[in-house]
Length: 209
Image 1 (cartoon, helix red, strand yellow):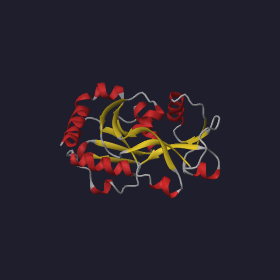
Image 2 (cartoon, helix red, strand yellow):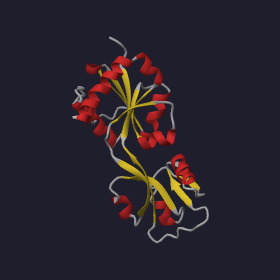
Image 3 (cartoon, rainbow, N blue to C red):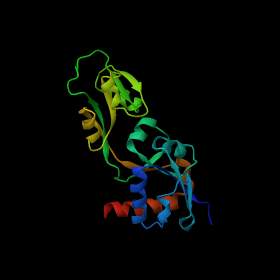
């Protein structure tokens, strides 16, 4: 038997939706796969190995060839700009990147402070708008920044908008729609193209159906 195909998967909601999609495409993932606390899970029946990682790390594992394939949010791909190929829009975990802030915030400030865990995306966006801003990188609870006065605005993922609302914030600008994508290491795609194309075909069939 050939070496297993290694797939990097993000933990959390994307993982659950991706696992359901793989099952719908005919891959026999065991029930305990969803509840496993292991960081590496082997599925011998499919000759697959899954690496369970933080969402921001998936593209890194794929770029460096530790994983052949990965499932990553478009937000991560935009921020990290890794050397990977995007094979398929999986159309799961739909959300969008947005600028948000307090509803009564003054908008004519000079070089406003913008808090985000997407500094590259935020810098690029505001540069395209011709606006000079100061980027403050945070790793969590981005909504807290305007409330405590750390930043004038934030750039973050918005799904339902409920978190913004609960923290007294409003969406100010829509940046880009986000879904999860199937990505591949360029070398793996050359060496394992038949196996990878088979997976893409099965997933695409489910998405089209």
